[in-house]
Image (cartoon, rainbow, N blue to C red; front, side):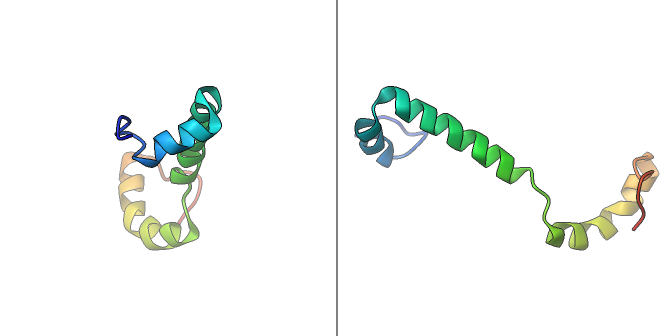
Length: 68
């Protein structure tokens, strides 16, 4: 039951319930969903970190389209 260390113990239960093909598709979709989520920049992050990073962006020539 603990064969798949990447997904955890629950993976064998879900794999058996869904079947191999559906399980693999489910995992693939969840990985894409996580990638979409983790690359989002929240308003909190913009407010907190942009003023700190703006001088660095300016120094590197990356601060050309907006100002802080």
